[in-house]
Image (cartoon, rainbow, N blue to C red; front, side):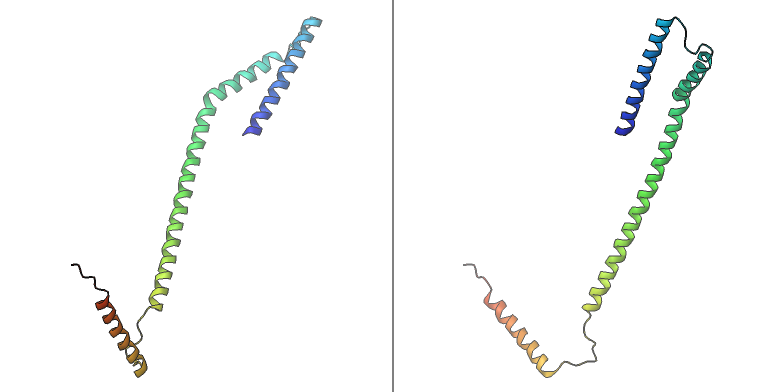
Length: 137
């Protein structure tokens, strides 16, 4: 945008310098520059200015409206895709957790040693609960 404005500024400066030089030449020589071309140039300038005042704003508004709708659709699609991807990833994580935490099959019996260890842990847990009880006096 800045580059566009700088180019327009330079073109305007060059145009103004050219007009001043032509006007100076006309005053100095007493001749009128491009007498036959002036009505054609004025007609072109009139059409261009009226088009830029009347047609250009409505066209720009229409283009910007369509661009806004496209941007809205793209954003909505991206958000929906992100939500679906997140949902799919969460489902995969939940399935993985479910598979890792499934209880062992009931038809497999634990060994005698593992049963003894489990009972010992239960008794330790009971004793630690009784010791950690805080009595308020």
